Structures are given as structure tokens and as C-alpha cells.
View 1 (cartoon, rainbow, N blue to C red):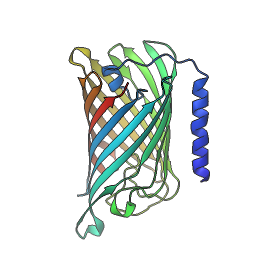
View 2: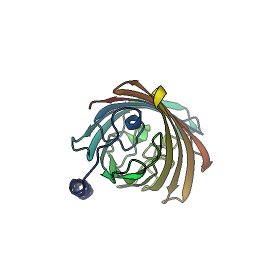
View 3: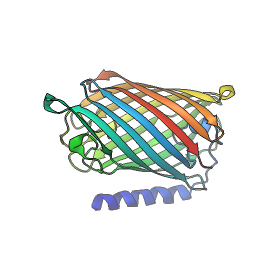
View 4: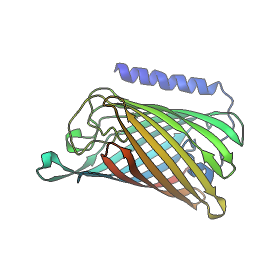
Length: 277
């Protein structure tokens, strides 16, 4: 309860701070908004994900999310409910298949605008919280509350090119079953609690928009440092996206392990976003 109280106070503090800052409106609906990781518009989001480990273990998930942005365009709240199917080799004695609810995710984001159209234009602090609603022994959850505060910076290099550097810190409330190589994903190679998580993550995504095609391309270098066990992981991610209608966008995200301790190999994610306003 103490941790929940502190998280609630942090959210209230971020909201109160944002209310005291004059904000400029974010990008209008379209390619710029759909490709922006700090988009403040209300939307429904559906993610279909596949995680392939170096061992025979695999993890599939469908995440249903609702994201609500306040009309002053300074605050964003979200909730995601995952349905997970895991295939893992427990003690190397045979495959096990399980399906069920994963860990619920909740998040809050606020944005501070500088009013610049080119150059450094926005700071977006956020807090993500994962609840231990998935069964960790069956590879569907971390078995602990996970907290992920972070910040996204927006740097517009050109009207068609933007840079979104991101930093986040992840820690668990108690011992958790989670791979340190990806944020909050359960470790289905070894489905037991190994200790508390303390991870630092840095992402460097560059997004190029193609307005005539109503599409975008992103390249994202992702570095994660596991502080509790002194391991690091480097991934490269490619994003391909396109507007289907004026308020609907589809995208494909592919992540490949590059260097570090080889655990998670490839992540494939398809995303559908339906903007509500």
C-alpha cells in the first residue's frame, strides 16, 4: 500500500506541475501523430506480439489498450490488458503450453511544450506500472509490481524527420520472474523468481515521415542495462507504419538482438491504432 500511495502522489505531482505550464497543441491527426511515441490523443490500441528466445521458449501476446488524453492536451492516461500464450521448456523435460491473462499495464504521461516547430520542442515525463495479474509460474507474468518512470524528448530535425530519445528506469516491488533484457516480459525459460529488478533503458528512435504515402519509417537503437546482475542488452528495431484512414493507423515493429547476453532473440509486434479525436 505504501508503494501505491507514493505512485499516486507522484502522478498527482506530475499533473499539478503540467497544469502550471502553458502548452502548445501537439501535431494534428495523421502520420505525425501516429508515429509519435509521446502522442497525447485519445485512442484505442491493439498490439499483437511474438517473442522468440534463444532457447525453444516462445511467448505470444494480444494487448488491448485504451488511451485517454485530456482535452487540454497535457495529460494522458492508459490501461492495457494482455492475453498471453507461452510455450516453454520447464527443466528441459518437455514443452508446456499455457494461455491466460498477463500483467495489466497502466501509465500516465504529461507533456511540456517549448513552442518550437523545428529543434527541441517537447519534454514528456511518464510513469508505467505493471500489476502482477498474470501467473508467473506459467510464464504469463512477472509475479511482482513493476514500476517504470521515464521521459521522452522530442527533437524535430526537419518537418519530415523527428528524433525521440527516451530514458526509463524499471524496478520491481519484490522478487520477480522477468527477463532483464526486455521491459517487464516474463522469463519463460526459467519460470521462477530470481530477485528484484533494477534496469536502465535508453532508446534512440529516429522517425522519417512520407506524407505523400501517408506512411513512416523508424529506426530505433535500444540499450538496456540490468543493474541487479550487471548484464547489458542491445537491440535494433525497425518500424514501418501507414495511415489506413484519417483516424486509423497500422504499423509493424521488428526488434533483433545485436549484442550482450543472448536471451531474447527477436520481437515482432503489429499495432493497430484507432484515434478517437
